[in-house]
Image (spheres, rainbow, N blue to C red):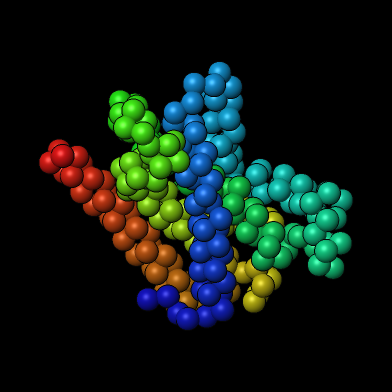
Length: 226
């Protein structure tokens, strides 16, 4: 079990905020990418998936430059708060939001794409508006994929190291997450604490994946019954 430290609480806060902020985008952009026939869709999909194939240090470097004091987001944030955007919790949230785009959008996109077009057309023919069709038909059918996206986002945020270190640094009590704390404990030869933290993240990741696969099997059986 993970020890109840400020580092654990900070990591959980970061994972929760990132997941909640990505939920609307997962629903909106995931659904749009699933049903649109726009020619430039491939470009947008490539941009969404880019954080998945880029080395974390590369993405972290560009985020560090793009959010630094010389950038307009950094200057705007500093003007409003008097603090720098990098090496802050807010900077970590923004970086985590960008880095987790593939995990939040792709599962939702696949879930919406699996809904037959004939079902949407039947709902429209029955007089349902596009919004009511989305709420009462598409969302109930796609919810396992959306839930999978949220679980993956949460779990991945907890374990992220490279981007978090580049953008947030390693400030105890402010930007030090569990993954960075494990690295610190290993550097200090405190293998007992490092093992406890690593084991906690390992068990959480396993339980998360187990839940996702169990949910996928449940959805498949439900569709067969229907």
